[in-house]
Amino acid sequence: MYFTPEEKIIGSDNFHDAVGSTRRDFLIGTVAAGTAAGATYFGYQKLDGNPVKVGWIGTGDEGSVLLSEHPPEYMDIVAIADLRPTNRKRAFDGDGNAERVGLVKKLGPDCKSKIKVYDDHKQLLQDPEIEAVVIAVPLNQHAPVAIDALNAGKHVLCEKLMAHNITQCKEMIKVARDNNRLLAIGHQRHYSVLYDNANHIVRQGLLGDIKFIRAQWHRNNSFPGRDSWRKSIAKEDAAFLEGKVDQYGYPDMERLINWRLYNETGGGLMAELGSHQLDACSIFLGKVHPIAVQGYGGRNFYGVKGVGSLDKQNDHREIDDHVYVTLEFPGPNYAEDQNDKVIVTYSSINTNRFEPYGESVFGSRGTMYVNLEKEALLFKEASPTTGGGGTEQRLHVLNGSGGDAVLNASESLAPSANAAVASAALEKISRGYTEEMEHFCYCIRNNNFDPPDKGGLKCNGTVAMADAIMALTSNLAMKHQKRIVFKDEWFDPTNPACPEEDEQVKG
Ligand SMILES: NC(=O)c1ccc[n+]([C@@H]2O[C@H](COP(=O)([O-])OP(=O)(O)OC[C@H]3O[C@@H](n4cnc5c(N)ncnc54)[C@H](O)[C@@H]3O)[C@@H](O)[C@H]2O)c1
Image (cartoon, rainbow, N blue to C red; front, side, top):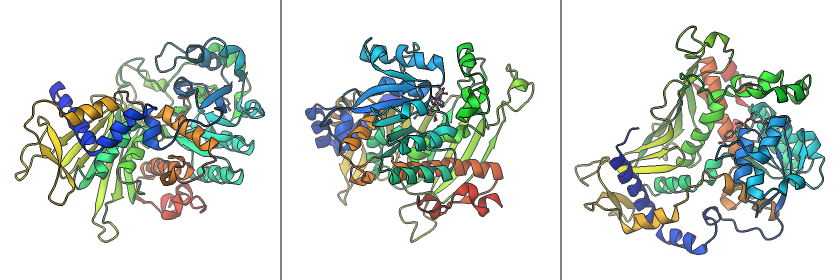
């Protein structure tokens, strides 16, 4: 969606006004508590006891982001492991990217002599000092590495997507239960203060009746050097791993380094990008399971010979570079009337980034646009009875005739006092990584195996498996070119039924 700078300011003020006026006491309490916003938002506290002793498995791009964001008051990093010498170094020294500062900058130069360094996860898991691990390895290794860790008695926080298929997700949940260990999955939007507030707006009913959500993650790889998923193989890594990669589950070096591009090691755009946003959409819809999915996916850019400036004939990727899926979700009255559906459309493309990434929630009374995990804009529908609206109108929230909060047009040209309260409280927008790690440690120390609504991990195995089901069944719908109806038993961790084994899907 395109907005002028003025419209962006108004939309952001509107969002803050709505959050400030409906959560005013909570926000003031958050600031007064003086703790990290996440702790107040997500219901945990500072650790009572020593930080959890953690080992890091995988210090590539995402592992390094997590190292930079890790909370030392909750986590004591005692070891790291990575197959690639270049990434073992990067864990300490960073790589010049502000998101990956490296442990030396974060913890001080002493950490180099204190933190143990292993080549692979199996060595690290033998370390008795380690209580928990953070896993950030390629998708096809999530389940094997997490299962090894759980069987070694470690609690696990594993990056998303939970696993390469749903059979593996169910196995991970079972092994965690059998070993009485926590299993958390890193869909960070569950711990994002921005998304918590955006979800609050939806739950308050401020958008009215929601029938459509549109989400997208668009990138433009048509310019040379813009494909962040294709990397060159460092000589040092190749020399160190020569003749060894297959023992770690990668057929060759190419599939270890460029794992996202191949079906055996990755899950394509839906696993890497779409899973985050379908997760967000389902949070907005109350974490309900979808009814059905259909879609189109193709190698419409990298698969076309001789077009553009890239040498695509040498690009042997297997994954689609353009995906478009449509999911049907149940509306609030679906049980009584099966016409009550919310449609979510998702697209991820590689040839245009005019609209980079975000989710737009379209309601009968308002529209909310969450942009780049960083900001949310809110606009009111112009209506004959309530007047005002559109992208140029400031809003405030008032109580409607039934006492419910409704959006109202405001004559004011300046943001309200409520908007000021909210923007002060939300000054530092976190993407949720730090909070996800804090809560993981808090649950470990408090032996909390409760479900999310009772204060337990917000993205536990069962929650994350539902995200994996949405993403991977979308892939199956595109592959088999059919509308697939989701089955309740797929979402039940104790039931062996899985979409990839389903006759409806395969037949
Ligand atoms: N939450 C998010 O927003 C987000 C963002 C990006 C990536 N991710 C996820 O993080 C994971 C890692 O992605 P990435 O971009 O860091 O990939 P990457 O290729 O940059 O890093 C993966 C690292 O794992 C190492 N590794 C592989 N197997 C290992 C083993 N058995 N023992 C030790 N090290 C091993 C590799 O050598 C590599 O350094 C993926 O699952 C990805 O989907 C999540």
